[in-house]
Length: 354
Image (cartoon, rainbow, N blue to C red; front, top):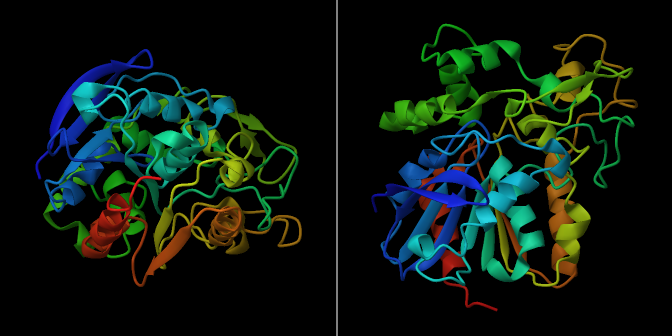
């Protein structure tokens, strides 16, 4: 299929939304991750059958959607509310009571979880692609999400690489520095840069569409008395992902209506991993961040174990989930292993509505 962009007003902001397929098709909602946009799904959309109605919004501060501020104290609630407001737009889904299969990548996986918790009867199934842990990103020590410090030091906007942020703001398209957006796409978004193929510049465009600043990416930070000296502020994207504000594990397990969940991840992911190169505690253990206080005080976050533990609880409470691990795959399964990813999506899209 080919997609087209539409501009709608929903939840009080102007949102750019890509749509593909017939209005009467099986509804599928695609929610992109951090530092990308709806166009990040284009390589996947091309592979999908025209029996689906695909809706893929640009989240606030990404792509062509309004650069509205992100209130980090709501976790990912601002994003989830924006997406929820699209569900009743008949120009998008063709019906005012659409129940899509929701596909969420990385940060978008957290948005998808929040959408399920807030609107359980509007979700037919959940496909989580390399999702953020239900306990947020960084700052927790065990499978129960126990904080490493009272203020979740070492998480949030203060952990962002300032060179990457500066190059993002400047629209840098070069490859002369490790933190250039192009090199981040090549080395962190995928395990094998050859998997980007002819879409590399398209995908780079999505990264460069990210709005930077205190209200968006990365957000604000505050000083901390704990290593590494920074803690989440109350504004911006990385703080919305911090465990200070995004902890959805118990709410997800307790949701009354439990659609099936499929969790797809690569075993070579360097972003969402028990050895994440974006987790300052893990980088500290490698000697890359000075002053690390050691594994007893500040262990790396067990992101994969946390997600599995929460989804096991979800299944024990009456839901159903399956974990699909793709060998040699990195952070973007839909780009790196598209055939397997499409198969998992279509399997969820054919599950009878509960």
